[in-house]
Image (spheres, rainbow, N blue to C red):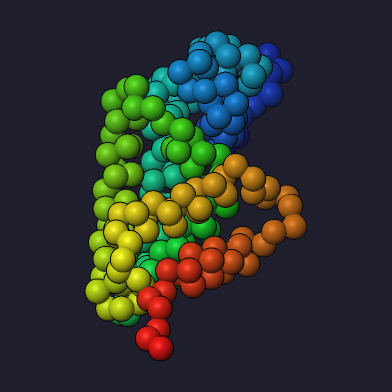
Length: 201
């Protein structure tokens, strides 16, 4: 990230990170397709040329935001897979996903609202599908080891767990009373306890 730049003629200066933050907020507010470069320049109080000083296009802003969200989720899963036991891998994958969603809520919100209307969006959706497949594989291994019930398909379990996790972006507030770590523990408890294989009587 570059240092904040002094804008010309007294306009407020923005760093690349600040421009990206404001762009993501506007994309989430209006929809990416409905947001023009003029809309973004107006929100920033800049000219289009000043905006292009930071970024080449609206698509580049989208690509960077989506890469941040996907990179965070992929990194959390990679870290979870470093554990030896499948149970810990699954637990940490869930905790890690919650941490990413709470830390990068605007970017993940944008990711979850993609429609696949551009090459950038299609590429992001492909990465997301690959991420989901890795999670389903992990759930399948947990089922094979008897950690989770096997009367529900691994794909369905993955969608149920991450449907719950993804809903966090709709109601979580970074300035609220809910602690991200405590939230991760709560999600893990609800998700896994309800999916444990019943013990024989």
